[in-house]
Length: 245
Image 1: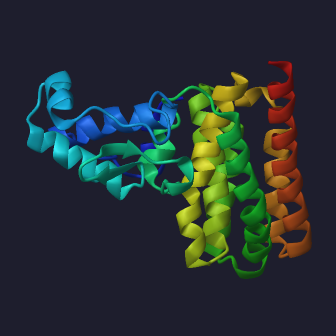
Image 2: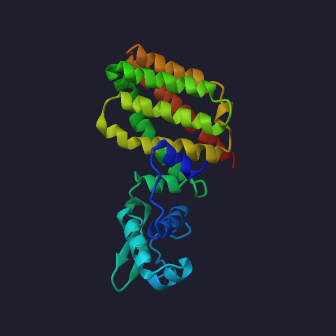
Image 3: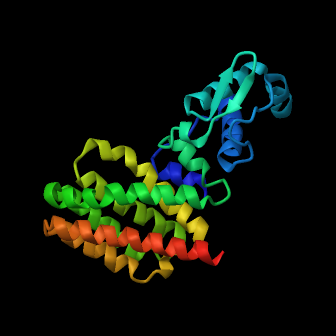
């Protein structure tokens, strides 16, 4: 799955293609992939300018972009150092997207699933309590789109992502909007880790439809439990994949 799918789901083109952001993207991908280890120093401005055939000003602007995301730290007299993961802005769209270009990171994926388990079951409960007719129509539409996504795995995962996004939106809690990137990244990285077509999970669509029906019936308790089971089942499948590798 390409990081471009992530940007499409977020309805953003990602960073604009100026020279500085292109260099930032190249460096950012290397940091996220682990090619640059935490606390290590990256090359100085002159070396980076020569490598990417750009000016030092472009390199300086690229570094500023990555500093703002928590990936780099500039120390006068020392150099530019890679920050440890605990300093990264993990909800940043580019950082979440760059994980799709990096080798599969099971630890990162587990953390994403932990966050989803903490928020999504409650969001389903709140959706059952607060969803408008328009919200319910969006959730139902996503389920039908999943059922009809026979052409490609990409079509299915987009529909799956839109289902979970619609449930979060139906909870009518503004803070949950910032979590949709976590959902997209988790779903896309999961496919990369398992290397399986998500359409092979035959029970997936009926189970998502059952979540929708519980929300539509305003059964918050059932909606929460079903969503928790849905996410736990996904976590178990990922664990089995990890153990088999």
